[in-house]
Amino acid sequence: MLLMNIIAWLLHAIIPVWALDLEVESKDSVCAATALIQQGMLDYYAGDKYGGAVGMFQSPYYWWQAGEAFGGMLDNWYFCQNNTFENLIRKAMLAQTGTKYDYMPDNQTMVEGNDDQGVWGLTVMGAVERNFTDPGDGKPGWLAMAQAIFNEVWSRWDDEHCGGGVRWQIFTWNSGYNYKNTISNACLFQLAARLGRYTNNQTYLHIAEEVFDWLHDVGYVVLSDKGNVYDGAEIDSNCTEVTRLEWTYNHGIVLGGLAYMYNATNGSSTWEERVSQILGGATDYFFENDIMYESGCQHNDSSTCNNDQRSFRSIFSRMLGLTSVLVPSVSDQIDTLLTASAAAAAKSCSGGTDGHTCGLNWFKGAWDGQYGLGEQMSALEVIQNTLVHTRPAPFTASDGGSSVGDASAGLNSSTTNVLQNKLSINTGDRAGAAVVTAVVLMIVVGGSVWMLF
Image (cartoon, rainbow, N blue to C red):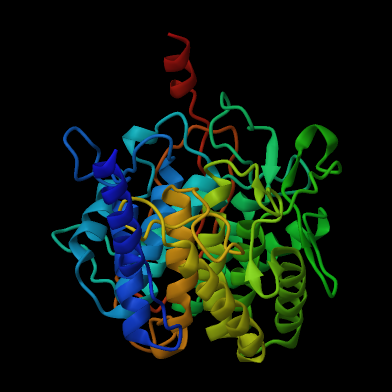
């Protein structure tokens, strides 16, 4: 009993020394803290464990969350100029590209959704804009992979139901195939906006505008001083019975797309107003005393957040950082929110056996006993995005971007779905991409037959 008391006293004495001691205004402090947080993330990584898949995290974490996680780690590589995890990130991203370099890997065959592929697309686009060295060895560049993802998701645009939009699921047999959700369409919107900005190809920007107009027209995005971003709707109701749940990642990805459109259109007042409106809603719904929380499932000291929802604040924080850089008129507002939230998140990273495991509740001023990949990712991104103004803004092909593109990438892929769409990309792609005139992806039924037998 005496020995146990001594051990408990020693742990109590030692752990506060290990806990994160963040100085938000100090780059060295931020980078030291985020290095520890990333080590905590890798506790859940399967790729460096016996029998584990490279690029995947352990159950119960899904494939899309790996894309989310490596997007945050890639940004940390850029902000902190720390190559400790560079090879791990590169190997993970390449392992999950699939044989056609379109992020439709064999291990996700039959279960992958448009939102899954879309989140990986945003991470790959981050590699493009941060000049993460292209894979080489005869492999396509990151830009070509992002274009492949865009081409495939856009090919699934469905005018027959709800007047447009892509479905949640790619494959007909998966639950949710008849649901058109915001996240899938928001990823498509943002990816098109980013490709348009990077390549100066106006076709991408026109498509981005079409996707956003649909999101607004169908009522998923409501523009007002406190704009709403809802979850989605079933096609059986012609998308009129909208699920009015609001999540940080939906707001964030829409907000990020708006910021890229503002920047790509040389400061359009229309896109700037939309940025302000969606940011106004996000500020009202997801912050209390400038501290971020997932209001859809976090209530005071209680939480009903599932493993997906516990990670949403990570990509939301990333999008806030990008918006702060791309839309100067809202920088002060966003930076205030990120600074307060980063300080609060760091205080939550004081638990576990390592003394810096991050928690879910950032209001507590200490670890709340919660832990997981989502908690680590969210703390990582909100803390490191206090550094967004210390490094150059996302590159474009005309101001230092080096990734090699291919506008026709992915167009010969056959993903099993019942949709088809024509796509024409003009010659404005400065990354040397090929000209595409018209491509139709035909119905493929082999997958469903395989499932039956």
